[in-house]
Image 1 (cartoon, each protein chain N blue to C red):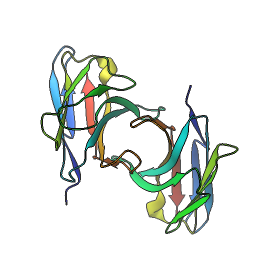
Image 2 (tube, rainbow over the protein chains, first blue to last red):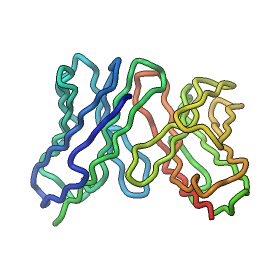
Image 3 (spheres, chains in turn purple, cyan):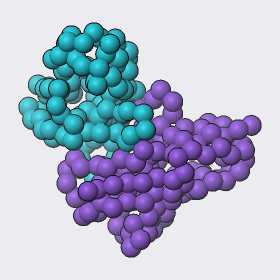
Image 4 (cartoon, helix red, strand yellow):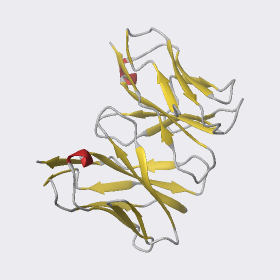
Length: 112
Length: 112
């Protein structure tokens, strides 16, 4: 069964600090891995998409890494801001048109 | 540019009532999806469409029906609402299989 596990479930950090969120998956065959940010009461917004051949992809202060051998990904947030408070969802796509497996998300709270 | 628009934003139903959720996108996307998001769970696919006039079942289709009569609209129907259908419903769209999803802002549905 395809699964995506995220850790930690929740995290509180001080404004200006860095943090790293983890994602482990058992989706096969693998197509790509995506990170989404979901603000409270809003729909998810795409941060990055990485294919098998990509190890790192950045989007501003967000940097995602992918190790396809160990089936792990991480999302690193640099110099956190209050607006980074949100749920971060890891999503893995297999080679089908519509099969996406969503993680439960990591809830990040950036405290002033 | 509105993107993906969902109506209504909130709705309360009594058990057995019916309703239709509307999703409209103005990006000329071929692929459209309906997901539900429940506490402590990742988003789960209800139904999807790969083009005008087509629909297909997702992971949790029971109790729901969909229609895609026009390319820009994707309707989700509940014929006889049940308390288990209390959830937040998200519509999403994309133009090609490996591209990112664009989500609407969600519909909070409560079935009493």
